Length: 365
Image 1: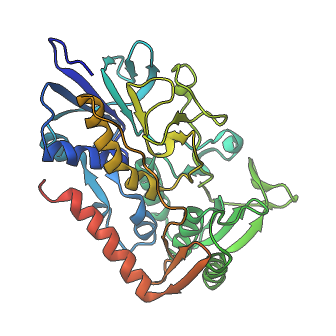
Image 2: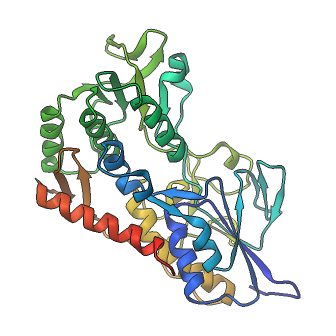
């Protein structure tokens, strides 16, 4: 990529997990001839792996928050606290909520996905989407300030929904988990699902195989049941941000940015994407935080390669990935392919992994 007279502007849009590795790469080795910018709505990134533990009361908020300001400074990047609301891929311009237009020569998108809430509008303030995480944390703290014994429904039967339901039960609430029929912990083996169901049973969480929508009287299930709830936590999976529609980027049928194995847009070579906002053209990957974390080093390497004219490499994760789910009671569930296990020792393993990740980005680079 030719530099010309002016430095090339490289923009990281979003403070997502994948961009942590990019910032660390820039801090470790300079990028001569570039101007670097990090645009993110929030200064602090909440590490998703520790969110259920915080929700259950095991961690303080500061134990899972990563301050992006010192990371950006170490990386030689200007930090812009703003929200991306538009992208013109052909013109290479980002539109920000403040009204600013930010031009770029190279762009990486890791803004994450959103939670669709339109079906739950009748519930009003009783709805709490799990994203944006910062708003979720504020909403959960406010809810818990009123004390235990209230009724919480978690909508979404993925591993994340299971962890949130167990965490809510740990805080002394009456909890329902609503999962579509056949949609309980997709992508996990029967053993891990069995351990999860047992953990939910021990915690007194009621499981409903149904889809849900909001109603003034509560959460209406498609089997005719209405659950009166004080709070409905939406963990229904990511949807693409609306501004992608007019971006000009190639997208998959669900609306996510279509990339190659090298994490580069299939339609605009000056744009990369990773995490929940992206969809691989060559293979389907689940939208799990572990993939955003694992893709980070490859994203960093390929951004550097794109700037220096070097070949890009493919991010090819294995077909099986280890997942550790917090059960809220001092145990954890391990899921790896068809294998599954549960125990307190796994909770200690998970804790070490999570704290090591936080330490990597909170100690001085």
